[in-house]
Length: 403
Image (cartoon, rainbow, N blue to C red; front, top):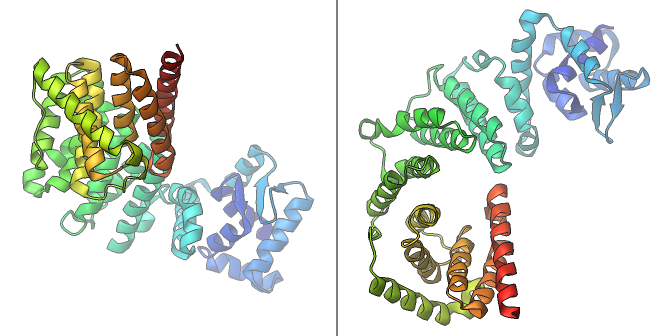
């Protein structure tokens, strides 16, 4: 029947699983088709959709997942419904459905429908080429989808959304002058996604697009910092340690802070250790209750400390404690951020190697508490890595304290 066919075609475009509200929003993309069906048989569009869903349930085409959600009983049935759409119209149809979901969903609905909607929109970006506002909307939606994918550690999907966003920029009408933050955020996230999936060539393409034109684009330190941070991480992943160290030192200097020494003497190390021990003794009972760090420039310095902590541990362990101790003192002086539990845990590792097992155990427990306090501000994968780090540290500390 034409009514059932139209509804099932739209449902197949949305996906294997869909809800009645999504169908209602998607139907607005086809006012003439549904108007004809409603006039012939039904009182309104919602009645048409409800009747079709009921008939499809009875005939075994669909089944209910919950009170408002349905799914095709087999993926081949969904494929058959999708094949009812003429091949030359499929991409346009999917994009129009996606645009309808984006335009008509309220903010809370769009958040849950975002990935479905943007996947449909990307089938035919030309649907968004009618106005500059639509083009900006398509780029922004891809950026939002990529951010959501990165948060869930779905790096391949995040890279794909960023690529679609960058391709949408090529449609024209979205100038850097008027939308500079959108450009910077998109290219920065694209570089990060490619870095996380191990595609350094694509990552460097995205970084070079921005950084190599930083003077002509007049990028500020704040705008170029996340791009430089990704390049620094990629350098030490490729074992280009000297280049990564030099870049991190320049970044510290650019944001107004003193770089680390390239070489350290034993008296310097002892001086740094004693300075750190005095601060830890003063703040030990207060560390878990320290305020959150909210100064943007200091948070940038923390990101550099974290990168240098990994770099020096892998490449030059004589500098490892110097980086950790400055990072720890920075935490005690200025407050907690999402990754500062690593500074406390790393100092605990150093104390463990020095035979100070009791203090190492106490700081390991503090780092565990800090990790739980900051769990909502951490990437899933980083949180799991920190958990393993602290857990192993606690095992070593407990073993040495007991023995």
